[in-house]
Length: 108
Image 1: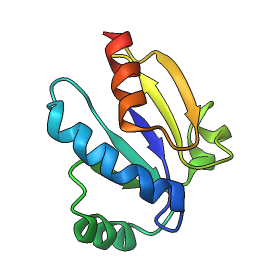
Image 2: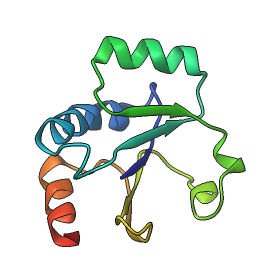
Image 3: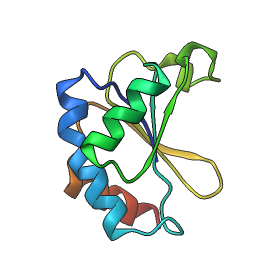
C-alpha cells in the first residue's frame, strides 16, 4: 500500500488513524504501508513521532518517480499494490478503514 500525503492536508490527517489501526491489525508480513510526502525529512520525522505513526514514512520528490506515481495530482492518493508489484487499485481522497480492509481482503 502506497499513500501520497502531506502533513498540512486535512484528509491525509484524517486517514492517519486508519493506517495506524491497519498496521496494528495486519502484520508487516501481510501488508507493507509506505506514506510518501514531498515535505522535508526532518519535518516528517517529527510529525510521525508526534502522531505515533507505526508505518513507514518517506520524503520524495514525486515528479522524479516513475508513472503513474509521478502523475499524482491530489492527496491523499492511495495505491493498492499486490505482492507481485501490480497496482490493483488507485484511490484519490480519503479511504476509510472499512473500505481499506475490504479492498485488501478482495486482493487476497
